[in-house]
Amino acid sequence: MLESLSIKNLALIKDQTIEFKKGLNVILGETGSGKSLIFDAINFVTGLKTDKSLLRTGESIMKVEALFSDLSSFTKQSLKDYDIIGDEILLSRTLNEEGKSSFRINGQPVVAGMVKAISKTLLDSLQQHEGMELLKSKNHLNLLDKFGGDEINDLKINLTQAYTLKIQIEKNILSLGGSDAERDRLKELLAFQIGEIEKCDLQPGEDEEIKAKLEMMSSAEKIVEVTSLADRNLSSSNYSVLNLMSEVIDALASLSKIDILSENYDRLTSLRYDIEDIADSLTKFSRSVSFDEIEFNRLDSRLDQIKLLKKKYGGTVEEVLSYCDKLKQRLEELEASQENIERLQKELSKQEKSLYEIATKLTNKRKEVALLIEQRVCKELFDLGMKNTIFKVKFEERKISPEGKDEVVFVFSANKGQELKNLSQTASGGEVSRIMLALKNIFTSVDEIGVLLFDEVDSGISGEVGNMVAKKLYNISKQTQVLCVSHLSQVAGLADSFLLVNKKVLNDETLTEVISITEEKGIEQIAKLIGGENITDVALSHAKEIRARKDELE
Image (cartoon, rainbow, N blue to C red):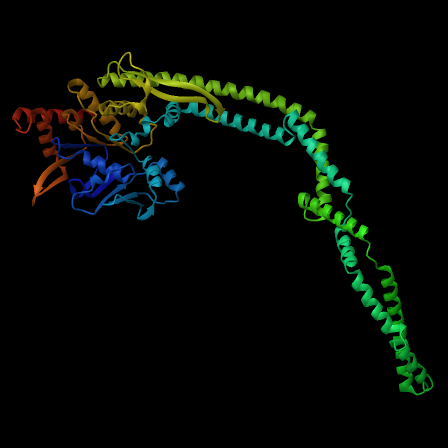
C-alpha cells in the first residue's frame, strides 16, 4: 500500500506530505482545487512521462517521494530481480528547470526503466493510459489463467512437461544428425575431414623432425665451413692438434717409467683418441651435409600442409590424429543411427500429438473461463450504467509454447453497432475508469497490484448507478488500497479515509493543500456534495444516512 506521498514544488503544491490509509481513500474538494495534482505526483514519482510545466513557478527543483509498504510477492520478486532488499520501498524523483530527472529507490540512484518496472507491480493509475496494466493486452492471458484457478494451472503444468519432453526428443534427433538431408550433409562433411587428414598420412612428431632438417639444410654452407676448419686444425694440417700431441706423446714415451710423467702420458694418449674420434665424426658429418633444393622445397611444402591441418583440427599433430579418430567414431554413429532416428521420430510424432491434445484441452478450459468473465464483466458494466456494453475475450491461435496455443485479448464496445476494440484503445476517461472498476471487482482476488487510483469514475452518473459505483469501489478496497477522486456523495459515504483538497492565497501566492479530515468534517463534505456550499440540516441528515450505509456493508 501507499503509506505517504511527499511533494515539493509541484504546480500549486509547495511543500506537502500526505498520509494514506488502507481501504478506500476518497479525495474531495471543489472543482479546480487541484485534486488531480495528487495523481500527477504519483504518476511523476513512478516514472511516467511528465512535463516541466508542472514545476512550480519561481522554483528550480521539483521533488516527489512515495513510501510503499505491505509489499506483494509480485513486487518482492521484482525487487529481487534488481537486487533490492527491503520490506518497504521509497521511490524518489526530482526534476530541474532544464527538464532533467533523477530517480532513487531506497536512497540509491537508479534508472527510469527500473522505477517503471517496479511501479507496475505496485499500482494501477487510471489518470494516464500508460499506467493501466490491467488494460494491456500482454497481461490478459495471465489474468484469465489466474481466474481459472487450479484446473488451468494443472493443465499448464502438464503442458510444460509435455513441451519439455518434445524439446528433448528434438535435441536427441539433432544429436544423431537431424533429418535425412541434414544427416547426409553431416556425413559428407565428416568423410571429407577424415579424408583430408588421412591423405596427409601424419606421423607423431613429424613436424618437429622436418623443422630440424630444414634448419640443417638452411645452414649447410656454414656447417661445411665450420667442420672443414675443425678438421684442418684437429687432424689434417702439419700443425694440427693431433700432430703436435703425437710429438709430445712420443717424447714422453721414453720417460714413461717416471711415475708422474707416466700418468700424464696415459692421459694425453687417451685424449688423443678422443680428439681423433671427434675429428672423424666431424668429417663424416661434413660429408653427409648438402643442400638439395628439391628436397628442401618438398620438406617446406610438407610442413605447410601439416600447419594447415593443425590450424583446422588441433594444436599439435597428436591432437589432429586424435580428432580424426573422433570424426571416425561420429561417422560410424551416424551410419548406425538410422534405426534410432526412426524410433525417435515416432516418439516425437506421438509427443507432438499429446502436446496438441493438452494445449487444446487448455484452450477449451480457457474459453469456458472466458465466457464466465464476459458474463460477469457485462453484468458489472450494466450495474455501472453502461447498459449497451459488449465485452469479449478474443482468442487467436499461435504456435504452441509452454503457455499453450492461445493469444488472448480483451475487446470492448460501449455502444451497439460499434466495432470491438482492445481495451487499451478505449479513449474516454470515465469509460475507462468504469471498465477498470468492473475488471478490478472480478480480478481483485488474482491481481496482485496493491494500490488502485481512480479518477472520473463517477463522471456523468448519479442515483442508483452512483450507489453501485460506490459499492464496487468499497468491495475492491477490502483487498486493495483505493485512492479515488470523487464528486459522488455515495462514494464519499463509504470512505475509510477523507482527504480534502483546498486552494488558498497566502502572501500573494496561490497554494493547494491536502489535509486529512475527521469523521465529522467528512460528513460535512458529504453534505456539501448533496446540497452545495450552504449546508442545511436536511443535507446533513442525508449525509449521515449515507455514511451509515458503510456500517451496514461491514
